[in-house]
Amino acid sequence: MPRQARLIEPGKLVHVITRFIGGRYLLAGPVERAEYLTRVDKLARRFDAVLLAYALMSTHVHWVLLAGEMHMRLFFQALNTGFAQWLNRRLDRNGPIFIDRYTTIVFDGPNALPLMSYVHGNPCRAGVVDDPGDSDWTSHRIYLGLEAGHDWLRTDLALKLCELQNDYRGREAFAEYVWDHRKDPRSKEMSGGDLKERRRKARVVAGAPVEVGTPTVNEESGVTTPLVARAQVPLRPRWPGSPELVIRHVARRAGVHLGELLSRSRRQPVVKARAAALVAWTRVLGRHAIEMTATLGICSGAGSQLIYGPWASDAETVAIAEAVAADCWKDEET
Image (cartoon, rainbow, N blue to C red; front, top):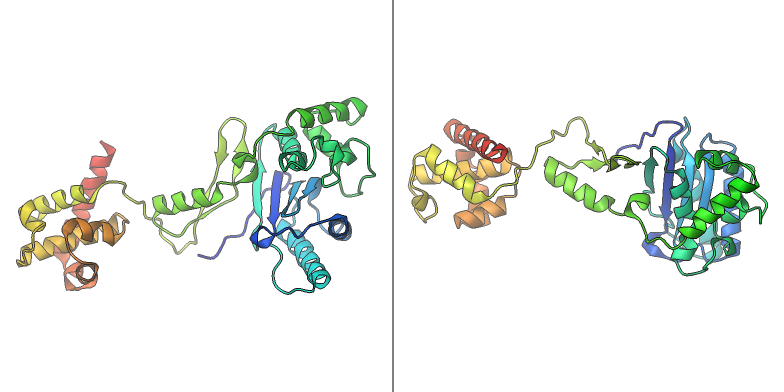
C-alpha cells in the first residue's frame, strides 16, 4: 500500500527523526555537521515551520519544531536531497543517503521540556559525553549561551513552551532539567521506536493494508496512533478466535457430523461444509487459509480449490459461511 501523506495541524509540536540508510555513520565529523547546518540556514527562511532544537548524530538527526502551513516534507526533502548530493561527492560514492521516510511524532500538552531534554540528551545516551553542554552535536550549547545561535532557531519560543522565562534563570532551569535527565533510557514514546510493531498489529486487526498515521503523545492518554487506509480499501476486522470453533459452527449449520467433517470423507455435503468453513475463515473473518486447512487436515492446494472453486460461489455455501461468521462474532462478544 502506498504511504499516505502526513497532515499535521499548524502550530503542533513535532519531533522529526531522519535516519541514514543502513545505520551508517555518515554525519561523521564537524565538516559534515557544518555543511548540514549551512543548508538549514539557506532553507529555513523559505519555509514556515518554526525550528526549536536539533541533535546531529552520526547515524541520524533529530529536530523539534512547530508545524507550519506548508508541508514539512518539502523542507526535509530539499534539505536531505541537497545534503545527500554533497556527501556523495565528498565520499566519491553513489546511492541513497537517507532512509526515504522520516519519523514524526506529534506532542500535545506540556511535553515540550521533556522532549527538548530527550533530544539534547542524545550524546549522553550515546556515551560520547557526560555533560550535554560539552557536545556541539546539539543545540544545547546555544541554549546555555556557550555558542552563537542561528536566526532560525527560536530558543525564546522554545523556553516559553517549556514554561520557562527567556532569561538567565529560565536557561539555568532548562540546563538543570536536561542534566538531570541526560541519561534517561531511550524512549519509544519520544522516538516512535515501536511504529513497525504498531503497524503490524493494526494490519492484523483491520484485515487490510492500513498505515499507522502520525502518533500523538498526550500527557493523559499516552500514545495514540490513527489508522489510515485508502478509500477503496475496505477495513475487515480480523476475528481472533480458533478454527476449531468455526468448524463446530459449520458442522451444526451444515447438518454434518463434526467427526466426518474432519475425516477424509468426500461426500458432497461434507465437501460443501469444508468450503463453507474456509470461506467463513478467510473471506469473512479475515484469517489465513493455512490455519483452517491444517485444522481440516487438507493440503493447501485442496484448500485453494474449495475457496476459489465452484463451491465457494454456491449460494448455500455463502449463506452458511456468513451465518457461521455471525455466530463466531457473537461468541466473541459474550
